[in-house]
Amino acid sequence: MNAERLHAVCLALQNEINQINIQNKLQQIVKSLQQIVNQPQQPQPQQQLSNVLTQFYEELSDSQSDGFSPAWRQSLEEIGGENLLGTALSERIKEIIERNQITPSAAHQELQQIQQEFERFIVDPKNGVHPEFAYF
Image (cartoon, rainbow, N blue to C red; front, side, top):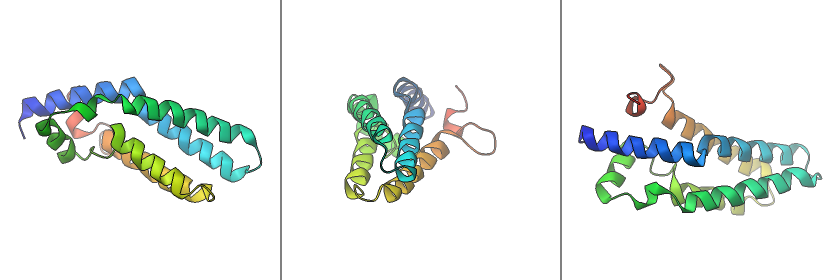
């Protein structure tokens, strides 16, 4: 992989991650689902989840990474982010929510796994920074 291309891809990804605030949105979704599991009769967590999902889906639909060139898409795949951004992430979340409509606890567990996968993608446990993002 070309180091200059990797650097450019990582800059674009960092911008997208920060602009959409992906990590925070995933945390909000997981938290809302946990509240739904804990308090299934309360409408507030359900409305909060709906609002967060609607906004998140809209923001992901305008994702810069969806427009990456094939070479940049390959770089994104090589660093493990192909399913953690843009419409790919949106589709993963939608599929989980639709499949688990009557079992929010299952949806919570699966989305929690995506949140953890995303955090591993952006943060290296050894030094706190993902190696590809280390030079920012």
